[in-house]
Image (cartoon, rainbow, N blue to C red; front, side, top):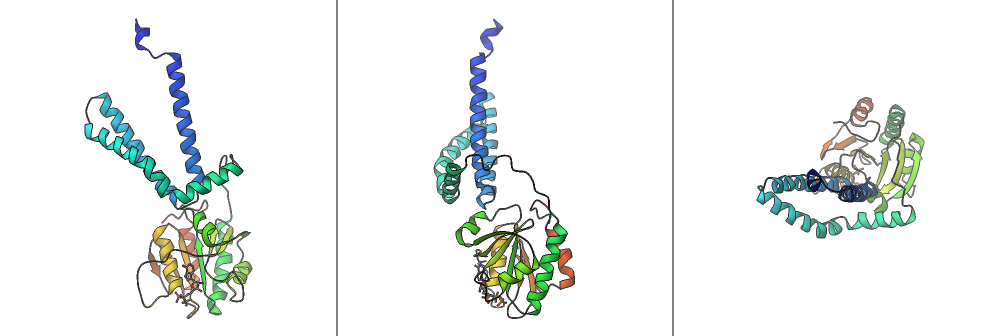
Length: 266
Ligand SMILES: Nc1ncnc2c1ncn2[C@@H]1O[C@H](COP(=O)(O)OP(=O)(O)OP(=O)(O)O)[C@@H](O)[C@H]1O
């Protein structure tokens, strides 16, 4: 008798395969866009959708929560059409990369690196850039990836951070000096990257500083600026520009914002 109420082995197996397939698809989707600004948006949408799905399922179980069930059904349908539009560039790139190397995003190890060395090299470069009044914009990538910006406008370098390399890049005779340098962990990932400009209009600052504020508004990156006009060192974080940074304070400031794994803790 009880066996009438128990699901058959086939049903259980079907459900397990169903869940495994959806999980694998979502994992692939998220790992494909990991490193882009769309990743956190996609993760947020999935969390909302999963919460609504759980509530809707509970609603069905207890024959209540009709509004939640209605909301879930409509949001889910809407998202099927909205997601390809919102994530069009990321999905396109992910599919292209997938066709070239299907297992590229699996089994990535978390790298370890010497953060003190990176900071020392950056500070040494900033000291000379500031003294020589050479303009510079250095962005430290945080948890939010900047891969999409780099692919749109930058020149890939993927070189170890060193003061000499930073000085060569920002040398005004170098073809790479315009735009921003992106640092991820202990690598200079790219140079000549065009950043989104902050909307804020302020006559006291030009486009280099507005670009630093812009990227710090849109992501959790820290952007370091050396003014070409005055040699003043500034940094932008969470949309706020701190100017007149003293060189002696720079190592502590950078250390407090950057931690291994690309996470800014403050
Ligand atoms: N969107 C952007 N992304 C990255 N870099 C940019 C962007 N816009 C401008 N820059 C950089 O800023 C330089 C122009 O700086 P501009 O003089 O307008 O700004 P500023 O804030 O007054 O800086 P400075 O004090 O160094 O003069 C450009 O040559 C380029 O290297």
